[in-house]
Length: 130
Image (cartoon, one colour):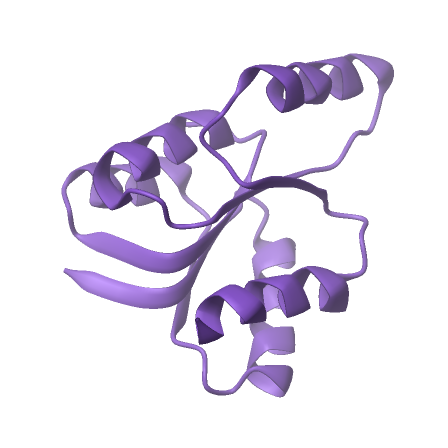
């Protein structure tokens, strides 16, 4: 099994690249991995091939969405902190994300990708250091 401090799953390569560069610059001690293929990440989770101290997952992805992946994490990895990330681009997307916020219980926090990355990763760092 591969175990990491942080696993970041987002179908948008530019987002994971920004995450990688920032983490390598500021959090050099983190063991982390990124996935742009949510189905691959999901299969590794349910196959007990992947674990993490903290998970950051995009909410809206093709194949497997963030809620499905968070549910798999809860069933396989117990209480590891899970952050679901979203970007509300239009009214319908915002309504969908609000449904996630109010209806799902298997994540610790919903974050907006437009939030300051340094603030989000400072929160993650607290969990990694525990």
